[in-house]
Amino acid sequence: MPGARRIHQIPAADRPREKLQRKGAATLSDFELWEVLVGIGSMGAAVGSIAKQLQKLLQKGPDAITYEALIAIKGINIATAGKILASLELARRHLVRDIQPLRTQQDILARLHDIRTKKQEYFVCLSLDGGQRLISQRTITIGTLDAVQAHPREVFADAIADRAATILVAHNHPSGDPQPSRQDITLTQQLHASGQLLGIPLQDHLILTKTEHFSCRQHHLL
Image (tube, rainbow, N blue to C red):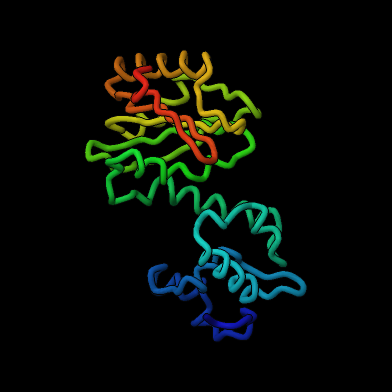
């Protein structure tokens, strides 16, 4: 990986943005792509130094790239952190589609591991194609410590746009108890009925804690 460098030290033709313009983004290294995203450095932090730290952060896995981790890097301000997170989220939503189908509950739980430890309730929806491949995973709403509000309209709006064949929803219980509340059961039944009407069946509603999970389908709640 290149060391810290300043843009003015690089020949004009080899600067990342000029190289991207002439040869296309695919010809740039990961390090150079980070330099393009960062744009310019700041006082005391060259763009190359910032890109180097971002590359190290990425090597820890996509979940390591959080707002808090980004603004902890010297030279990254709120605007740059927002631009990076927005770019990654757009790519995840619209450009990246998992090739491997989610055929088992373990496959699905692996996709949802990030919400297990959230301190608030996160309600997420997975849009799946006819081959059980993930089209998109979205956070529909974020609730409180012990409740999350969601509406079938919000859940199915993006699934319709995705042309999903089926959906699967999940939320976490920070309390550590995976048992569904009365509100959880009511929402599950509403989503099941809406899915039947729209032709996008609800596969399951999973409730997760740090170590356990509850399947509404396996417990005959839909």
